Image 1: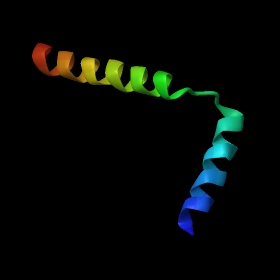
Image 2: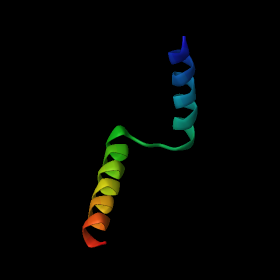
Image 3: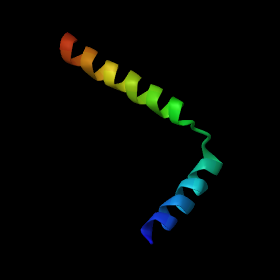
Length: 42
């Protein structure tokens, strides 16, 4: 199964960078706001 490979890859990444789903969501939200603001300004 391909899912097993994805899980082990994810765990490998998690060891290097500690990112909670909340943090990822927050970063995505902030990035979206920056993009929207850039469109409004320029």
